[in-house]
Image 1 (cartoon, one colour):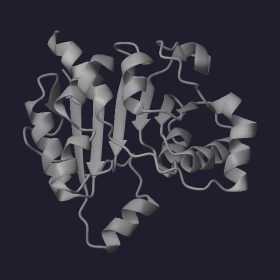
Image 2: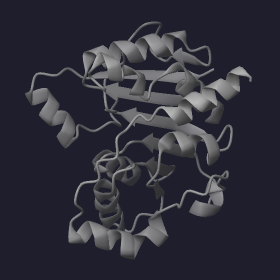
Image 3: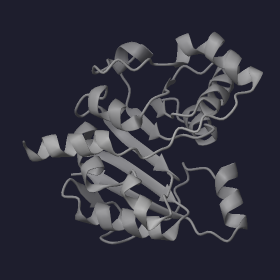
Length: 232
């Protein structure tokens, strides 16, 4: 078995999320009935032609774990030159975002309701992404759960294969031990280089808006750490 086989088995075996599906509101459920055919991508396990999906050739940005979709909705509305793919496993957030996208007749966003690791491994062709965003992923606070953190050597190595040369990876967290873990993993990753200097966190970029989740964390006294890395 090769190292790449080991990485693939690791990525499939350990989930970075627990699916606790909250109750969807009637409006969120209607979003799946009315808007999934337009905004949704059903997981097929084969590489997608995103240019065909969007009807144009444009740089592609992927956000993993978009939550309620607040940041993705804003980013896609203010960056119409690029196309966005969002991945989230929790139905209420997907439904909420689809309603927001439909309200403004968005054309540059498509969504998965599926495990991001499987989407990345099987649906994103090598060299496809110009940017990837993972903002405020579950920090898995308890030490015995740290292995579930999505930012791990095998994951960022796999992600690098899906990035175009010079593509940007933007991480953000409000949990300092996870920020330190992210920095350690990324600084050791041979396929990535720190965009602001070795071992450095970045200033909050203008394109990452302050979300409701982030404001709540700041009120609780949490810091926020951004990390920016380029594909070598």
